[in-house]
Image (tube, rainbow, N blue to C red; front, side):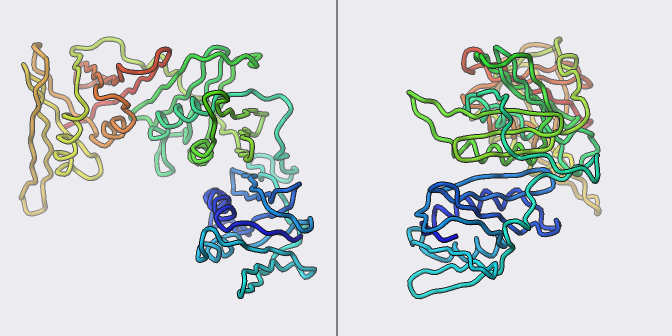
Length: 391
C-alpha cells in the first residue's frame, strides 16, 4: 500500500474514528487503513460501534494495514493542514509516513489479523455480525434526522443513571420520522411529517446514546443542496442498526428493552399556560440557578398575578445561606402556583428553541409540566415533559 494525501483530509477522518473507541478496550487503538479505488478507507470499532469512512487520495499502490490510531492522529495534527503526506505499508507491517525532510515508522498489524465486527454481548462465541449495509434499507432526509437528534439527545439517561434505557427510540413511519427519549425525570418527543416512500412497515428501535452522538457528528458533515438534499440510508436487523451517508457507514448494536408508552405519560390537563420570551426568561434562570444545589439544580417558581418569581438557595455547614431571587412579568391572572423544577433541564430545552418564544403548561406541584415551541415548522410536533421536584 502506498498513497499521498493532504493532512487535513486524513485528520478529519481520524478524528471521527477516535470518538467511537474506548480506551479500556483491548487493542482499541488500532484503525484499519485500506486503499479502495481512489480512496483511503478507515475502519475503527468500539464495544458497540463500528465506523467505516473514507477520503480521496492519490493511490500509488493498493493494500491495507492496521496502525495505532491515536499516535498517528497526534503526529499528523502537528503538521500544517495543507501539507501533503506519503503513507506506505512495508513488508514488515510498518506504516512509513514521510513529508519532505521527515520520515516516521509506526509499527502496525497485518490486515488479515485485524477482525472487523461488533462483539456479541448475549451470544458469546458466535461470529461477529457483518458490518456491510443490508440490501433492504430506507432513505431518510439527513437534515430531519439531525433535527430529531438535536431535540432528544439531551434527555437520554447517562451511564450513571439508574434508569434502564440509555438511548432513544427512533420512529420511522410512512408519513413521519422522529425520536423520543427519557431519563425518568423528563421526556423529549420530536416528530416531523414527511413522506418516506420506501417504508414497508412502521419501524421503531432503540439507539444508544453513544451511537446518537456519533451519528450527530456524521450528519453535521453531510452536505446537500437545494436541488439535492442530503440523504442517509437506514437499515436494521435483529442485532444491529446501520446508517450510511455517501462516504461513511456507522453500525451500532441495537439496545434491548422496550421504550415506555410515551403517549400515556403526556400531561393533558393544566392549571396554567404561560407564553414566555426566551431572551427574557433564560438569563434570569441562569443567574438564579447559580445559587441552587449543584446536584439537583432546584429552582422554585412562584407564579402570581402578573409575575413569575424564581428563587434558589443553598444552606452551608455553618448555617450561612446562599440565596438568589429574581422575577419577570408574565401574563397570568389565576390562583398562585408554587412549583420546583431542575433549572438545567429547562436551560437545555432553551438551547433548541429556534424562535424567541416558548409555551409552559403547568399543572399542580406534583404533576408533570409540558413545554412547547409554538413557532415550529408546519408538520412538526415537539413536546418536552418535565417532572417537578420538591423545593
